[in-house]
Every structure is written in C-alpha cells, then in structure tokens.
Image (cartoon, rainbow, N blue to C red):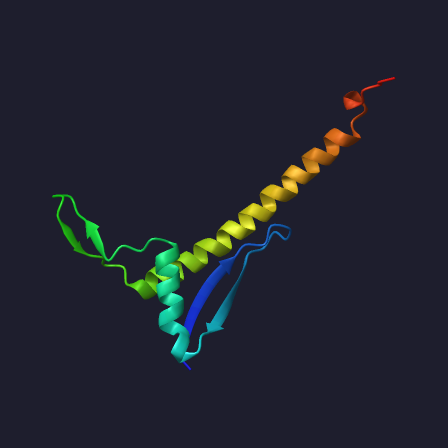
Length: 106
C-alpha cells in the first residue's frame, strides 16, 4: 500500500504546552490518484501558474504537495471553526442568562 504521511502540529487550546504528533493516513495504492485528483479538483489546483511577466509556467507545487497542504489547511479550519463556535455559544448563553435582556410582555 502506498502511504501519504502528513505531519501535523496540533496546538492544544486548553493546555498551555504545545505537543506535536505525527498522524499517518494510509491510502490504498489503487486509490491514491483518485484522492489526489479529488482534492486538486475540489480545491482548484492549477497545473499552470502565471508569473510576473504574465506568462504561464508549470506549477512548481506538485499535486501531491498541494493535496497535503489542503488537508493540513482543512484540519486547521476545522479547529478554528470549533473554537469560534464555542466562543459564540458561550456569548449567546451569557446574553440569554443576563436579566437585562429579559422583556416583560403581558
């Protein structure tokens, strides 16, 4: 089986120290191209990139490296989204619990 290894630095928000952990994903050899092509399609990989003189050159970032970068970015985005939701939920609950926000309607 062909392995794509993704090393991620996970920052723990609750605990002060920072820990690193390698996370390995094993993709069956017959599915590697499908996974890479799918990520490249979903995240708009460009085979050609424009340079300063407005001409195009082959993208120096391989499809494999692009896929790895997109997976890492996805994980970072999920962590941020969860944190934002937690903050929003806490603020929402404070507003609900605040007696200043009660309306006495009869």
